[in-house]
Length: 124
Image 1 (tube, one colour):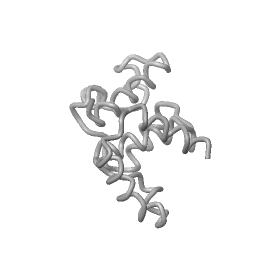
Image 2 (cartoon, helix red, strand yellow; image 1 turned 90 degrees about the vertical axis):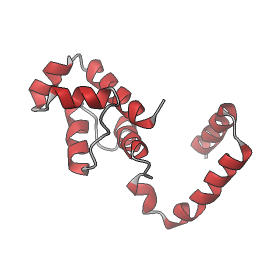
Image 3 (tube, rainbow, N blue to C red; image 1 turned 60 degrees about the horizontal axis):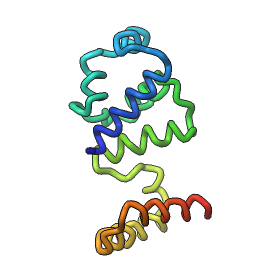
Image 4 (cartoon, one colour; image 1 turned 180 degrees about the vertical axis):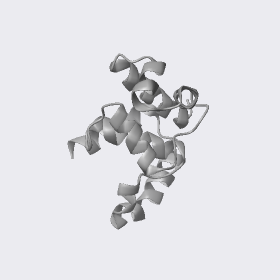
């Protein structure tokens, strides 16, 4: 599944969790239903404007700094082929990212091994 579809799926799931139809969500927040529908279906990428993304996140009831907030912005960045901005502020991490990418690409890391790596990082 393409990452822009993952963003749209996340967006839609959060809207539905609140019990809102697409039209009701848009009516309450002043959004165009056609555009939101296209975002949710992956037909339109997330906006590039941080302000617009923040407005969407707040409208979905996401709390600043929560896991859902971070995932929302991470999925938006990934859909644009970008690294989230807060990672770019850490120069040590940025220096190591190419090595991580080459290692994963060169080893053809399985999904299971990737899950194990993520779990190891979480525990650290």
